[in-house]
Every structure is written in structure tokens, then in C-alpha cells.
Length: 116
Length: 115
Image (cartoon, rainbow over all chains, first blue to last red):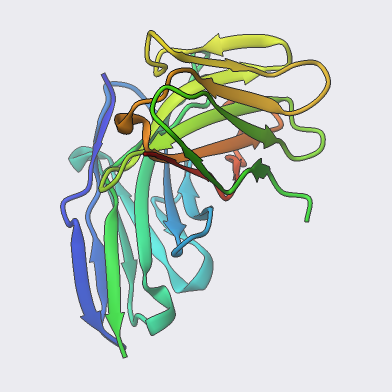
């Protein structure tokens, strides 16, 4: 069965610090990979996604993620965080291929708190 | 706002009552997914529907939960005889095609509290 693991449950950083959130998945086939952000009281918004091609993906708001196939990882990074990045971050996968119904498997989420 | 509309935003029910959660997808989207977010947990897939059809309900609890997406009107997630453990945020997402490259559009969720 597919599963997604996010290593950091709660991260506290000061503004301008660099961010890296870990995400590992378990699945034998080819996957699509996503990072979503959820600001307090709001819906999930897509930060970035990887389907194929360049394993370094750039998303909105200065975020990027790198897909390392050999490590089954898709870590999220940002060189310099801002207070407004305080939110919950979710890594998600779904399976490519003919059996793909589009359902996403989410990690547990990482709460990021950025101190001004 | 042409996004996914969910209502109500907040719903309080007493144990044993019924909860009905509504989801109006993005115009033109015929695929709807429901997810549940329990406190301190990530989102868990519940059910995937196309118009008038349930495609994948592998994440739905076996009892008390049902979902529909009629030809006309919003998708409905129905929870009968609610219990405290049903308290959670329920999110709906819609897409133009299943598993498409563009991902989904999520709604703002319905926060169900069972008292």
C-alpha cells in the first residue's frame, strides 16, 4: 500500500532562516508528487508538483522541491522563510498509470511556525 | 469565486444526529473527492465520485457514512448517527479529469463538531 511519511511534525524557525521539510513515500510504481500548504482556517493550496522531467521543481512563493528517486524522497525547501509562511505543509502522492483514480495519499503534515 | 464551495463551514451536531455536508465543485468539474482530516493528522481519502457514480469508496467507513454526486446539484457527504469520533474537518476537492496533471481544487472544508 502507498504511504507518505513526513519526518518533522512541528518546525519553528526565525525569519530569514532556511527551510527543509522531509517527505518520503512508499510505492512500487511511478508516482506524481505534490506539496500543499494550508494556512490557518483556509483550504489547501498547491505549492508545487512533480510528474516527470527535471527532478528539481520550483513552485509558488519561492518554494522548491527535489525528487530523489533512489531515496523515494521529495523534500521541500525555501532559502529564506517569512513570517507569512507560518502554515501547515502536506506532502502527497498519487499513482501514475491506468489505475490512477486521482486520489491522493497525504503525509501527516508539518506545522511550520516562523517567528518574526 | 469560481472555486470549490463547501457548506456549511462549521457544523455542530449532537451525538446520534445526522450531518450533511455539501460540496459544489468548480464549474465544469465532474470529479469529486472527499477527504477527512482528524485532529493532529493528515488528510485521509474517503471517496471519489463522478456524476451519479461512486468510483472508489475504499476510504469510507463501512457504516453510517454515504456519499452521492447527483446529476444536478452538489455532492453530499452524509453521516448518520454521528459520534464524537466523527469530529473532524471534511474537505472536498474537484477536478476536470481523474488523476490529471493539474491536480485538484480544494474547498475550504466543513468543520464538524459532535457534542
